[in-house]
Amino acid sequence: MAAFVSFESLAFGYPGRPLLSDINLHAERGEVVALMGGSGSGKTTLLRLLGGQLRPDSGRVVFDGEDVGALNRAALYGLRRRMGMLFQYGALFTDLSVFENVAFPLREHTRLPQSMIRDLVLMKLEAVGLRGSAALMPAQISGGMARRVALARAIALDPPLLVYDEPFAGLDPISLGTIAHLIRALNDALGATSIVVTHDVAETFAIADRVYLISQGRLMAQGTPAELRASTDPFVVQFLSGSRDGPVRFHQPAPSLASDLGITS
Amino acid sequence: MTTWLASLGAWTIGAVALLGHAARFFLRLCAALPAACLRPRLIVDQLHFIGNRSLSIIGVSGLFVGFVLGLQGYYTLQRYGSAEALGLLVALSLVRELGPVVAALLFAGRAGTSLTAEVGLMKAGEQLAAMEMMAVDPVARILAPRFIAALIAMPLLAAMFSAIGILGGWAVGVGLIGVDAGAFWSQMQAGVDVFKDVGNGVIKSAVFGVICGFIALYVGHESQPTPEGVARATTTTVVASSLAVLGFDFILTALMFGAT
Image (tube, rainbow over all chains, first blue to last red; front, side, top):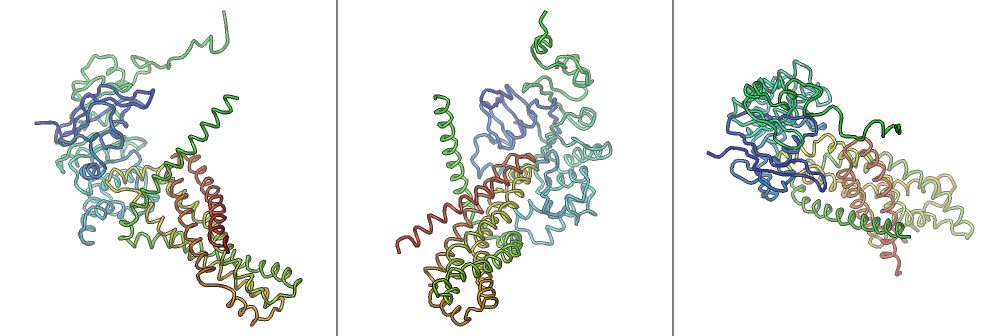
């Protein structure tokens, strides 16, 4: 059976600045797949390609048998309804209450009666533990809560694919654990597939079925968390241990310090 | 010499590209209007936000412009012994020119800036991107209702401005200076044509509504998603709207009143 989501020998870049090259990865139904890499390694660009906000220069992004890059606007919108995305900082609509934020996809895409929308929204909020905060505005809740509300909004239409962009960034340890637990629990409860873009090793390894490591726009390693922990590849070792120096240098390429300071010997 | 030519060329290409981009965006916005009309609730909210909340500044400004028109108009007219034409002068100035133009300038400053900042901040907070990913077109859901609201609000605000201005002119001319009230109103009634004067004023303000609304939304939508970017976009909105309003006012006046 073909994978639910796959990137096939994908390349993408802006003129004069290649970002991604020769990316091959796939996610099977029911899996939580993590895409990990340093900042600026092209992880978020992969998500934009998956959502059809960007189109690949070569190669394909396939979601449920459809080539995302080849779809027109209407087909793309149809596809996105089957995709729930959690943005890095939640991206809640600041002019709508928590309740209305979660209700938004339901109101836009369905013609359900008010009472049913209310029940659905309260159920989604209950799933992320925030039913009691339905009446608050986004400005009144903490960053971790906002992320959970955004999660409730992402699952409002019960999408078969959930996509997370840096879900752990800037959270306190408790919120971080909560979000990680929710990602796994919701994936299993909804029978969905999840793709998590992150650089947080500990939380990700605890919940992911498979992990891809990306650096400089290339796929460096892949495997289950256990396989990667056992790896002796220098990049994997450096990434997992967080060493300052290794294949990824501490110093960015530059002319020699002496010549930059004008010291000539 | 060549660098001068090159930068002129680059500027021209940039300007034409911007115009083309804006025109395409305008068409996209217009294509989204029919669907937006089916959701009057969203339009009413925006109408309240950008129309109602502009009322106080429009009213106060209109009143004072009327006061000044009454004073200055009387000063000039009485030199020629035709002070009783004050009503006509006040009404025509307001209905034809000052109402639509000054109301549009105030509207650009009061409502245009808030539209730009709102849309720019929604973009900076990834709210527009999130909407895109929820398969909801932000142009249809966010921009179109605001554009329609600007389109409706502008003529109403201009009419309000003119009406209050005329009352201001009456208060100063008749109340303070002592121009004959009957002459004031009857001259106005006889000299102001419903279609030629009032109608053209309404057309003008509707055009200004399109200009101010579109510029505010376009600039906000295209702003850099950073604090400086939104700040710059807000300034751009006021400058571009004001200049566009004044420029189009001249063109419209030439077309409407030029031949006669």
